[in-house]
Amino acid sequence: MVRFSNIEFFWFFAGFVLVVFFFISASRKRKKDILAFGGANLAEKMLIGYVPRIRKLKEVLLLSALFVLLLALTGPQVGTKITEVKRKGIDIMIAIDVSTSMNAEDISPSRLGRAKYEASKFIERLKGDRVGLVAFAGISYLHCPLTLDYSASKLFLDAIDTGIIGTQGTAIADAILLCLKSFKSDVKKHKVIIVISDGEDHEGDLSKAIDKAIEDGVIIYSVGVGTLSGSPIPVINKKTGVVEFKRDRGNRVVTSSLEEESLQKIAAMTGGEYYSMEMIPDVFPRIYKSITGLEEKEFSTHEYSDYREQFQIFLVIGLILLLLEILLPEKIYKKNGENG
Image (cartoon, rainbow, N blue to C red):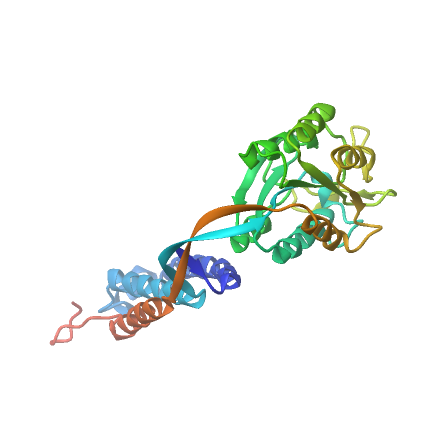
C-alpha cells in the first residue's frame, strides 16, 4: 500500500504540465526563428554538429528528472505489514449539491466553495468514522465510497465542482437513496447522511426517500447554503470566456435563493437537525458534536502499518537523470571537424 506524507505538493504537478507545454512550444518557435533569421542555407551552417534526436533526448531526461523529483517531494511511503484493526465509529455519507446555483456568491467565496471548505474541516475531525461522498445535481453519483482514508476522501472532495454533472437540477431524493445504498449494511443504526444544498428546485419523490431513510434507521442532517435574499448565478460565456450572470428565457438575470422547506423536512422527519450556514457559522462542529453522541458500532478493518519512507529512491533516480542530461552533449563533431 502506498501513501504520501506531503499530498499538498501534488499541486506542483499542475506547474509541471505547464513546463511540458513550454518545452513543446519553445522547440517549435526555435525552429521557426532559425529559418526566419537566415533561411535554409544559413540554418544548415548554424546547426553543424547539431543532432535533433539528442536535443529531444536531453529534454526528455530533464522533464523526467523534474517529474521524479516532484514525486520524491510528495513523500511516498510503502506499508510493509497488514494488521487487523478494530474501530468504533459511525458511517457518514456527505451528499453535496453541485448544481450551477451553488456557484452563487452570497456565501463567500461561493456556496460550493464554502461547503467544500467546511466539509473538509469536518472530515479532519473524524476519528474512526467511515466517510463517503455523493455529488448530485439533476442526477447523483457516488464520488467516494465509505473509507477510513481521510486524506483520500479530502482529495475527492477537492475535485468536486459544478461541472462534474452535466444534468442540471437538484435531485435531493435521488442523492439520499444513493447514500442509503452506499452504506451496504442491514444494521438499522450507526449511519448518518449530511445533505449540503441550497434546496432549489428539488426533484424526485422526496417523501419516498425520507421513508426509506426512516426504515433503514438513518439520521439525516441538512445544511442550507445560501441566503434567503438570494444572489445572481455566475456563468462563463462559452464563446467569449467572460463571466456573466445566468438569465432566464426573458433575458432577465436569475436570482437564486436558499429554499429551506425541503431541507428542514428531511432533517425533522429522520431525527436529524437543519442548519443554515448563513445564520450559524459553526454548523459542522455542531453536527460533529451531535454525531459523537450517537451509538457507535465496532468493525474490523485490515490496514497497512510500518510505513517506510521511499522518497530516497525517487531522489536518486531524479538526480541520475539530471546528471545524464548535463553530461550528454548537444552537438557531436568528428575529429576532422565535420558534423557527425
